[in-house]
Amino acid sequence: MFNNIRHLRYVIGIATAGSLFKAAEELMVSESALSAAVKACEQEVGYDIFIRRPARPLTLTSAGIEFIRSAAVFLEQADFFHQQSIGLGTALKGDVRLGCFSAMSSMMLPGVIRYCQEHFPQLHVLIAEYDLLELVKRLRNGEVDVAITYDLHYDNELVFERLFDVRPHVGVAANHWLTERDSVSLHEIADEPMVLIDYPVTKQHILRLLLDQAITPNVAYYPKTIETLHAFVANGFGYSLFFLKPHGGLDSASSIHRLTIENAVPSHRVVVAYPRQVRLTSRIRAVVGACQQVYSEGKQALECGR
Image (spheres, rainbow, N blue to C red):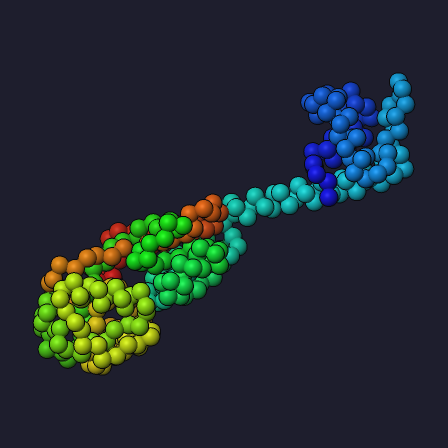
């Protein structure tokens, strides 16, 4: 492997020009730099490329002729590789690995995928769903390019760009005694059965939120998927706390009555995240921009239950 592709270009330039003087003029470098390039290449290949005769034009040895022919092909391939590599960073085509926190994927991913299909038809967005900790891990080790999640788990190796804020709300079955109301205090339902999603970070966050209100919940079920959570609440097995509200396609979710929480509870930030130390290609930045366009502040107010 040649240590310096520039040396190969210089040697080809000399062979084309027929002399160091002419090659130096055409390449706009010194003759000493060209001579050094020839010596470096000849030392690497182990034979003479040029026949050197005083006051005579440089001529190629038989091995030199083959060398120049092969070097020209190599440089053509190198130039193609260079242009193709630049394209990987600038072209809006190819694969982008988009991760999403599984509790929100059914609500967040369709809009982003639809936007990308309409605006970047040559992009292929590959989706992956994980819990919060696994998603952060895969972002950090490069298995996911960009992700939609909450910023509940801070990591200084990641950049979190805000999409919008959500405030938790209560969900109950359509025949619950609270269906005539629009809001509720958490203390009013503290003794009722609760359905609590079994995502480690989310579960601990909700329990901590209730603890801050001096409430120990009566947890009856720990479903492991957001779909099962919606189904259990819709069927009257207990109330639950939600952050996002589906905007179509899930019958059990649409039948849940949702109430604003009267207590002072914190809002939470939905973000698009990516590794801090990785320079984003244009196609990854395009997906980040799609997330921002689809879920910028105010566009999803009703759907997100704010």
